[in-house]
Image (cartoon, rainbow, N blue to C red; front, side, top):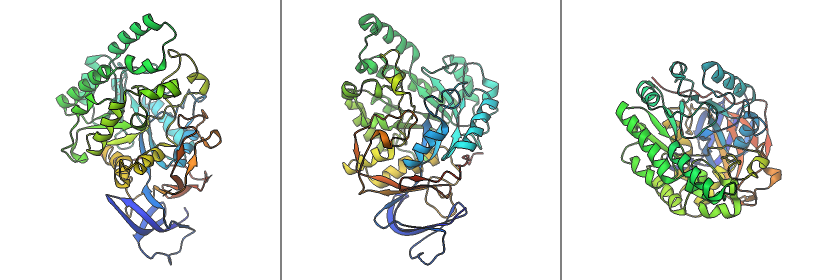
Length: 446
């Protein structure tokens, strides 16, 4: 693997910003020092005035392969990820077939090894009837277990309380949950079908997938985790009310219950349905503005631990259907670091905090091995950001296979200039080098 020397970068790492050089050799960060300009390297990157971040780690994506490859593939979406400064992802099991056996999970890892431009891990799925398969999961090289405690595709809704009790009791690695109460949602959906028939406006989505549905399910997950001392990570928190379930008086490494907020729940609110309609139809729903303000506050005070995307592309044609037919989810991974940097420009968050929540915290939360930080000896997952180079999101620069983004037409004030994945310069000034693929993520777990 080629050696790379990065000169005069403003390094954002572990709560500090300082200027230094970085030498990358054999896929690892070998030196972080000033005045390395005399060091020999195959590639030299002059980074004066730019900011060097650890690679972003997205702990919740849906890359649709296998089975749904008309929407996306691991190759296409990992390419979009790398262009957006994301060097590692953790992908969900609701593909087709659902990843509910060790053999099906192995197939996904094989696809990742051959096609992913970013580092990768895949969650093992939980259903009402695959306990024995779940218990075979190796926590050293699998990011965790995923439980849909709300609507999903295929056989992945886990609504049997005895199954939940058993998994929470016996699981010896992290459980990630999608929390929405299915009974509440079904009752609300029936009422809105009676009221609107087939013509439900998209802005009714948060009235169907309500605050109450989220809180009822999240509080159940927390109750089970507390009962069994389970390592629980609740995905995509979307309501102010749920925040009371989380503590900010413990260091992340000491928390048994952690949480995540997604970029769309920080950026969009219910008013945006008028313009964007089903393009911002997600589960859990984008809700009233008070929620995004409360979520942002909780992110800053550490009740919320991680920022993710829940990247879940669908085709443009699928999203143009009526409310009941249009699937929930949308593409986000190429743009979510840019979105957080917009909040930085607004004075709402510092660069150090962005790095903490998008790089350090996912690594700590999942106990990733030698990633998430700019440290000597660590894998060289590195992103170089130009805070002074603006660009406009247009169809021609959208890399998702689905070809659209809810951010189309938006001007971002920052751009990603270089992305190193495990020491390989995978992206440089708009160009990709696909000769080297990403690596399987490993975890420091007993």
